[in-house]
Length: 499
Image 1 (cartoon, helix red, strand yellow):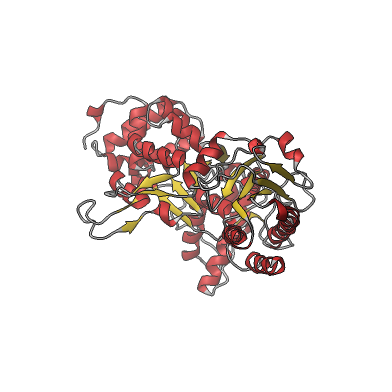
Image 2 (cartoon, one colour; image 1 turned 90 degrees about the vertical axis):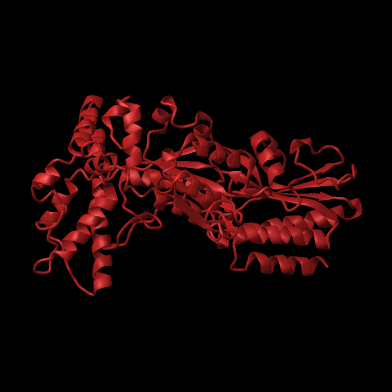
C-alpha cells in the first residue's frame, strides 16, 4: 500500500502541471491511503522568513487568511523541527495553532511537522503538517512523510524553484543581457531591482510597484508571477484607470444575469479567473475611495460577491498593484485610503526610470531593432552616433517612448539605417508651433521644478484648450484622471475648468 502511494505521488509531482496544484492533489491522496486528517503545506515567505498556510484541503480560505494574519512561527520554533521534524501528541500542538476541521475532534491524535529542505538551505522552504489518528501506524507514517518531503524537495529543484536569489549569469558576447526573463539590461539599478524581484517571487505577500509611465511595471509583475510557485496558474491584469467605476467592479467581481442594464448573462470576474494565481491591478492610484474600500475587503477576507449576487465567493489570489501616482501624497489629500495603502505596500518595488539606467539604452535599441528586422525580413542598422545621442536624451516616456522612437525611425529608414530626422522624436528636430505649446508635466516633475511651475503649466494648458479638461490633459501629456488629481492637489478653483 505504501509503495503504491509513493509511486502515485511521484507521478503527480513529476507531471507537467502547476506544482502547487500537484501538492494539493497528493495531500488529498494521503487521506485516501492513510489514517490522516487536515494535511497542510506552510510556505516560507523569504522576505520576512514567516511561514504562511498555503495549501490545506480541509481548511476554508477564510480560516487560512485569518491564521496567516494572526499567527507567526518564529525562527526559534523552526529550530525544533529543522532537521528531523517533530511529533506532537494530544493537545501539545499549540506551537502552530492551526485551525482544525470541525470533524477532527479526537484529542489523542498526533501532529507530524516535517520540514522540506533542499539545496542545503538553512531554513525549510516549506513545512508539511499532518494529523495522525492511529498511534500504531505512527512510525511508518512518519518515515513515509519524510520520504515524501524529499520527493517534494527534488520536484522543486527540477522545476526551477529557488529559495534564494539567483546569481546572474554573464551574458555571452553579442547577446542582449537580461536580468530577469524579458527585462533587458545590466545596469546597477536594474540588477538591484532584479535581486529583490527574485527574492520575493516565491512569497505570497502583496507587492506595490511604483514608477513612471513606460518603465515596465506590468513586465515586472509578470516576472514575479512567472518565478513563483504558482507560475502555471493564471496571470490576469486589468488597467483600473481605463474603466469607469461600474465597469471596473464588473470586470473584477463579475456579475449575475440582470445585475444591471446590459447584463444579459452571468459573467465571472477577474478575481475568479485569477484564482490560484496572480491578479495585477495597474493604475490603482486612479481608483475612487468607494472602489478602494471594496478591494480592501477582498484583501482582508479573501472573499467577495458578484454584482447582483448574494453568494460569497472565496478566492486565493496574489495581488500585485502598480501606479505612477505618489500614493503617500494622495493619502494626505484624502484621495487614497490609508488602510489600503498599508495593505498593498507590504513590499514596495521602485522601477528606475530610463534616464537612471542609460547604460541599458544600447541593449534596448538592439532588442527593438532585432525584433523589427525579424518581423519585416530586413536588415536595418543604426549608426553609433545615433546610439550615443539617444543615450543622452531624458526620455520622460521611458522605455515605451524609446521603443516608439526606434519604430518610427525604422519606418523612415534611409540607406539601410534608422532615420530620426523625419520622425516624431523631438531629440532630432525642433517641434512645430503646435507642439511648442505642449507642456510635459512628467518632465517638470522629473527635473524637480517647483510646484509653482507645474501649476503654471496646468493653467496655460487649460487656457489654450479653453477650459476643456480632456484637451488640456493631452497638451500636458497626462491622463484626464491625472489632470484632475493635480487640480485637487493644488487646490485650483473649479471655476477655472469648464467641462
